[in-house]
Image (cartoon, rainbow, N blue to C red; front, side):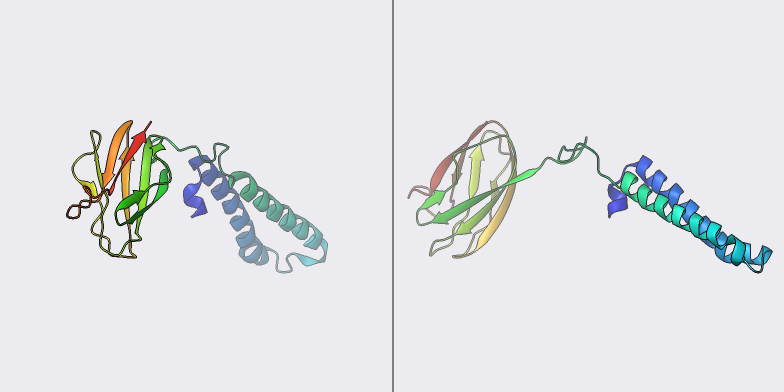
Length: 176
């Protein structure tokens, strides 16, 4: 997975260094013994060990240099999906509790917990909501998740079960 996260330049750098390391290992184990049967022999052993250690160090250095992430950690790349924020919502008879009535624009996942004794759902209403954005019926003690992108504006969150909205299961959320 690390290789998939690297830039093309980094992948090429690692591949070139890896190819050099592999070529040395293969030639030292297959080609050199055919040409010089006593390879590395008593006279060439120190040169062989030095070359092996130098290439090993170069490979480790290449991994350290080319394996680093870009300096812009946390900054989304062009075309990347925006970060999703999580908001915990608690529903019970007959109220909806949000941690805050105001949030910034963005993509949010609402984790809705039904702390009541009967089933509830959570529905969004607002000018920026397309269609019916809401959870399915959440049984008592259950949870549901709903991910929505919120633009600037005012939203109403309510339970659409029977007359729960009229009984007070409604709250406002301001974005922006």
